[in-house]
Amino acid sequence: MSAAPTQPPAVAISGSPRSRSRSKLLAELTLEALAERGYETRLIDLATLPADALLARGESPEVDEAIKVVGRARIVIAATPTYRALYSGLLKAFFDLMPQSHLHGKLCIGLQTGTAREHYLSPEYGLRPLFVSLEGIPAAGIYATDDEFVEGGPSARLREWVNELADRAVVLSGREPTRP
Ligand SMILES: Cc1cc2nc3c(=O)[nH]c(=O)nc-3n(C[C@H](O)[C@H](O)[C@H](O)COP(=O)(O)O)c2cc1C
Image (cartoon, rainbow, N blue to C red; front, side, top):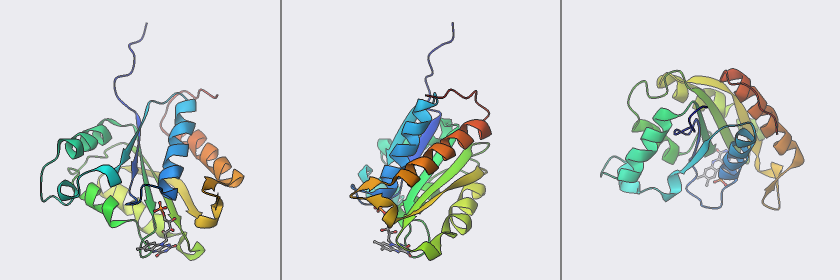
């Protein structure tokens, strides 16, 4: 008999300051797809955490806990809107609080939304080096333009991308695949 998992192996960090957020929706879809494949999952919504602690101007048990949760994860997903051709400042602030090597050996996946198709390389020059700076192992993620969200929901194509991404993540994280 194996013990029930006590740690969430797949964690998504939502870096949009907006509570109704496309990139957060993309993170939730990806976590759902990973849960269907046997992962324990957890969403960290940075929009709900105290801003002073995120800016290192104060202390917060919630922020400390969020950092610990990331430290225990096998897969770390960063979901962010494109702001000025890069990830959001909110996401960066959270990553700045992580100790060096915090992502050591973890599979790291970026999910980015933006209005401009031209910024599709932004995860490559933004999120990828961000993960590597903390010793994470970056894997291909998703850059989705806002027109992939129809009436607030994801397009069929976007759902397909998410399922493909989840299949890849299972293989790359070295876990036995369990399909729904
Ligand atoms: C301050 C700000 C800057 C933005 N800069 C860009 C940008 O450089 N490139 C882009 O494609 N979209 C840009 N956008 C659009 C958002 O990235 C896009 O609407 C995104 O899907 C919003 O994600 P969210 O719903 O998760 O917050 C910007 C939006 C804001 C508010």
